Length: 299
Image (cartoon, rainbow, N blue to C red; front, side, top):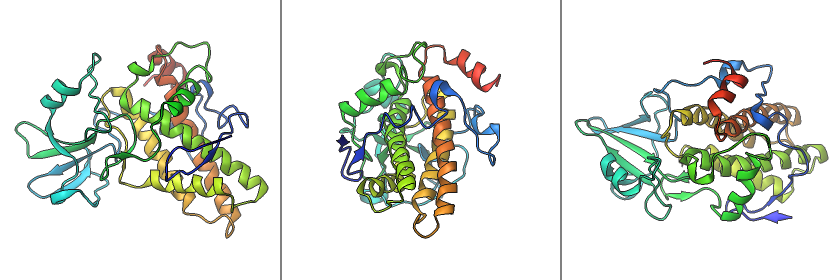
């Protein structure tokens, strides 16, 4: 069976039966490679945010950098008059788009990328307030946002992985958690397709090429994840950024030229994806604090 998620990711072969998940995701168990330390899953401080979930523009200098950290300064193509996103104030967004949980949720058809000004500050935070990873310039999802995808992916990252746990509903999940459900589900399929292709050495298959295209698009700076609106989003952002960086590196390699290098990068990519997916399962559970301490240790 094949699913068409979007024009960029043309077709992905659904391989749910190939393996329960990429090995160690189930129940939030962390997988580590020999080159990685356990620090990869430490809870980040409140000052840390996803490098692409939001950017801060300083009006005085016109510079753009990772929100609050000041790192990862990059320039990007923009919309009309050199600006990315629609100008808004935080109060306006809260009044118009905040749900009963206090999360700002902007529909994809209503300019989800916003330039949020701060009272008494020259800084403008550019952030994605939808529940999907979007191209910050086009303000469109990098993948399908279909109900079918949600219906497949949300149960998979919750009850399928740890059926004895209790989980929040889709309506209760944060924007970032929802986006990760969609994006990581597609990425997981791409990694399983890649694993199968490596065994068969058929690198010309459409499914493999489409998977690499998805990894390239996701790894781009312009592919903006939703901004963190809950403390637990911060760690998820960190692990997602690490995973998508690995996806980009994997897609940049030619397996026909150097199978060994590609296979080694695949191992790293698989580990980074498992860590993000495992954490996602934990964060979507109703007793996430208890499970975080049990699995990852006291923070």
